[in-house]
Image (cartoon, rainbow, N blue to C red; front, side, top):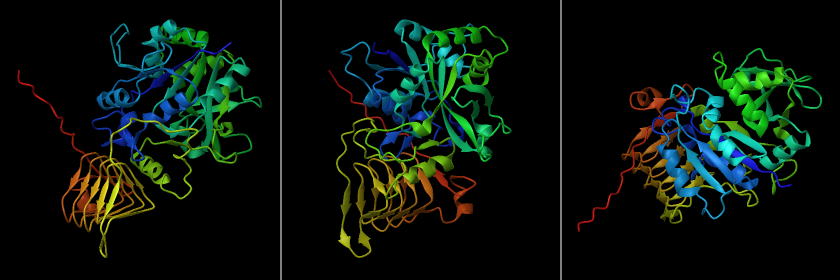
Length: 418
């Protein structure tokens, strides 16, 4: 029997800790790695794993995300079981409210599950940077005849307050679930780490529907998977298992390749994850053709490096340069350049993340900075060298990363006179 798997992606988070990058967009729509969006990781994981029936639940500041999905993630519609459909908040609750929690987001769209009638439902978040062979997790779930399976990974115990922490027996059956508890128990034999939920779940459909309906009827619930549904399933002695993400294998990767998973919930984490990509042997390999990271297909020209003169040579070292970029005499080191970035003569960009369509003027100097889309840096501007001065104009994090807010791109409107 071929298993019917329905994918539900939770992509409605505000991402307040990523401000100002989330000022005008939802966190899953934030650009990453030059040409991608954060949501591309979970979508690629699903598609590469053979899961083609996917709903993407959106909510806050969803326009950028909806546009990205429409440009790059639409199937041809030839088969009814192959689709990626964005689902704005339907306000199906009695009070016609926004989603009150992760479980409420699924409950308000319970009709989609009932109509699809899948064997299992994969509920994944859209705000992490990682690769996962989801088919391997589904197989694990089915072999154990589990009611629910939670993807988990060891993290430093100091981060226990940020995650749901899992206690398992020797067979990986979950015996307790501690949601964002700084005093959560550590892994047996490893006092420095806890077993943390990644927020990715596989549910048997019957278990999920019953749990959602019971939770919706509970007036004392916060309607969240981590706080309410999962602890109740464990308390009811349901067959709930932890899937160790470290056992996941990606086709085309060496057998000893460590797994990669980053929660890019803060500017610092987002910056560091981007910087991971420019290593000679990056922990996250974007060049594995057996497990491609998919995104929108843009009609960009190739990147261009102009001039070969002393003190005026377009060059990039230990950097990622996306399509449409022009380096005309500028120098880029240890940085990520998004699509269509221009670096003019004499400008230097070091240890920066530059998003799409930015223009770096002549002799400008940038260091330890993130430039949002469409920023135009005037000639001779200096950013990242005097943080006290930068704070007068830009957002500066506690660790000294300067974030320059972007501009809305102009919209071309053609008027036809008849």
